[in-house]
Image (cartoon, rainbow, N blue to C red; front, side):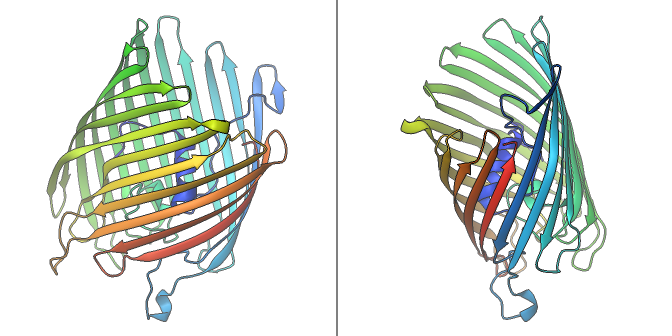
Amino acid sequence: MRNGFPVTALVVLAFLAWAGGDAAAQVPTNLPDEAPLTFGKTQLFPVYAVDLGWTDNLYYYPTSDDPDLQPISTAYTSIAPGFVLEIPFSQSHARVGYVLDYRGYTTNAIDAHFDQFFVGEGEFRFANGLELGVRDDFQQGVLDTKVFDEGGGVTFQGDSFRSNDARVDFSHSLGTSRVLGFSAYNHRINFIERISGYFDTNEDGADLSGQHQLAPAFRLEWELAYSRAFLTRPATAQYDAEERTEKERSWKVGGAWLLGEGSALQFRVGWQHNRTESSDPSTLQLVTGGLTYSRGVPAGAQLGVDLARDVYPAIYGQNNVYISNRLAVTFSNDPRAQVTIGASAGFWFNRFPVANPQGVTREDTTLAGGAWIGYRLGRWTIARLSVRTEHRSSTVPGFDYDVNSVEATISLGS
């Protein structure tokens, strides 16, 4: 199930960095204005990152008297070289990026060490107002589970998998005040080593959207979306073999206000219908949506608030889906400054609608926070130190956990 209002890869990466997940290196999208290497109009951006980190609970284990289920504390090293190649032409561009990430742990619990990230995209603008966008995003390795479970219902267990998102976007500007768009996508996940019990996924979807500039500072937005996903899982030591078909349709309306220089408010709200065909079929209808507020404050700082409600597939009990509500707040200074600082806090409330055999409905409450400081060593190089903490409590025993981590990073090309 995909969110019909897509978020850029940069925002997702920043969110994972403080949300408590073990966010691996990805192909960056915040490229500098000038490329270190140029070949005519072609620009080559070398990227490189070295991370030294530590976490006190690699697998998000709860406190237990079982010696085999005690939280695992480990240090890790990540070395991630890569590149982004961009070819601009007229008002369009094509871009290819690749990052190979080697991750080593002091614990021997994880055998796989290499993660790969590839992005290929093109944006083509024509004089008649038509725009065409194509994008393919590939990831493979032992990645954080938020790659396939954004709501955080499943925690990191060392799963090795590959995911691929392919998307085509068409839009047409109707004068200066209206834009009509159509998007289609395919989303696939295949597990190389299945530990968490999640499903291989093959999902197709499409959405029709529009933007209407009703005033200089206000834009009306709407969307109609539909998706169908096939989920399969072979029998494992902990889970039975299962197949599901999930169908989702929704409509949303919203708006975007420019509240002043550097400040904006965007919201969307609508009705969502989910139907799952499985051994325990279910239907869920509810209001979903989100609100994002950003405000520029003195000295180039930025305040951001994000409030959202969405539905994600579940693997707990007889639940096919769960409902996730979240609130995230971030504060940071100008990212172009010599010294950068920031802090963040988040709150999640996840609810699984179907009670377990004991009659208990699983509800998880998660609190997360983080802070960072960075020092710019040059135009494209920055050193950064970050800390984060996450605590989850649950109405069902075994789903509580506490995670604390610290990470030092030197990166080129960001």
